[in-house]
Length: 365
Image (cartoon, rainbow, N blue to C red; front, side, top):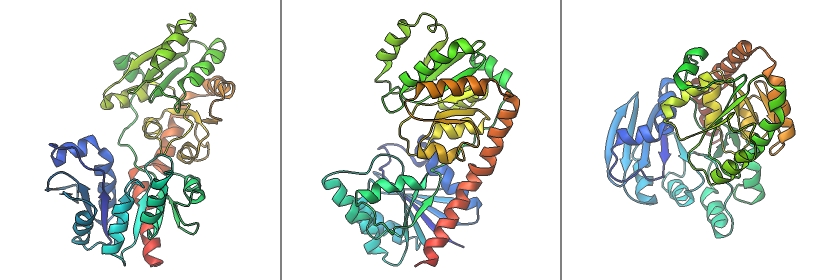
């Protein structure tokens, strides 16, 4: 049985027990559990203020205090065949791990963000020099790391989703009644209101599309919102839209499943994303995406097999997508979105992608 250590060096919050951390960081529970269901022996080593231990869903979780050397020792004690190391943000840990286990291949997985610059770039290049391979949501995301000499040009790159979703489609009418979402079409935004997410481009698209649509409504869920005042000023200047754009703010994560099930389309204006959790959750609920044509979204939608991909910042193309896709049979669209999720994005698929990566780097050892 393939022995995998799933290593997360991002320190768990002080005072939280293992169960609370797994709730706060669901990927830390969901992906290892998927690997275990796929027949692998999986242990999670998690950086933490104090030692703790838990076994759940066929996975052993070990919370380990200390710095890079002590974490490397904790990993080595598990006698892994492969180490799955999370994030480029911990190059010293990656180097310590290689020194402690020079014959054990390390798969380093990206979790978003830009390649480091300055002295951090040099440190990252030093720390990742001996990793066996890297994983990104989309292969082309590795190009920037190669161009900045963080990664060797010959470093193997695997396309692996960061996670998936347990969401299931709900009856749209029931979900709409429960959430209050309505509209023809009913458009949903899930994401921060910041420059990268570009809510103003989506709002400009909605304004252009509005007169060609029957009764459109845009519902916006967000947490951090540095552009909230700008968005409100924009809406105040658009009297025709003030009752059609609904600023919901932050909502509990468990309510997102109902919101996605109630909506016809998920809209996003992102210019850059490491992955796309909201997109994955929407597809799990059968919600058709109208999103930007960036590497991670292109990968998640199968190159546009479901929904529309439009250039970032292009309100004209986004408006066109809103109008065109609203004219299609939405029952069929919902079935296609969920079928694509089952076929290409489920936890079963994530585990299969990771197993293929593990076996490949073991074979090349």
